[in-house]
Image (cartoon, rainbow, N blue to C red; front, top):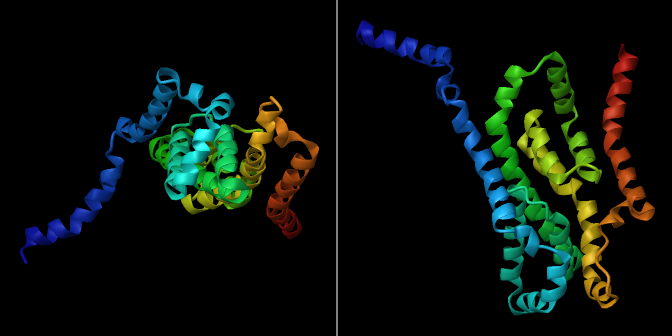
Length: 259
C-alpha cells in the first residue's frame, strides 16, 4: 500500500469529524423544511380551505346519519379514514381534536373510538415532534444558556413522568405539548409512550360524550367541551398527575437524603 493511500485512509475519518460530518454541513434552512411544511399545510387548510368550518359539532349534527351509515357499510375503511384524518390534523396542528374525538366515540363506541383517536393523535404528534427536533433542537442548544441546559437535563432525567403530566393536564394546548419536548431532548420512544397513554384519559372522556351524541342533539344541545373540568372527571385526572410525579419526587427526596 502506498504512503499516499495510507495517509488518505488515516486522515479521512478525522477530516470528516473535524468538518462535523455531512449532517453538520446541512444549512439551517434545509432542516427547517419539514416543520415549515407541516405548519404551512395546516395554515392553508385552516385559513384558505376553511377545514375548521367543516369539522364542527354543527356539521356532526347535520351529517351524523350519513357518517353512521358509512361505518355500517364498511367499518374497516371508516376506521382507517378516521385514523388518517386524525393523523393529518394533528401533524398539521389543526385544533379540531375534541370534535374528532367526539366523532370517534359516536361512530365507533367508547372503546374503539378512544383507541382510534389515541392512535391517530400519537402518530401525528410523533410526525411533528420529529420535524421540530430536526429543525430547531440543535439551533436552540447552541443559543441556550446554562439555565436552559439545566432544565433540559432535568427534563430528560424524568422525561416519561413529565410527558405524562403534560399530556394529562388539559390546560396546555395539544400542539404546544407536541413541540416543546422536541426542544428539550426527549427521546422518541419516551415521547411516543407518554403521548399514547397520557392522552388516553381525556380522550376516553370525550369519546364517552360522543357515544351519547344522538341524545345530546335530540335535546337541542351541543357537546360540552368543558366537561373535562367537571370535578368528578378532573379529580381522577389530577390523581393520575400526582401518581406520574411520584418518581420525580422520590428522586429529589433520595438525592437530598444522600446529600
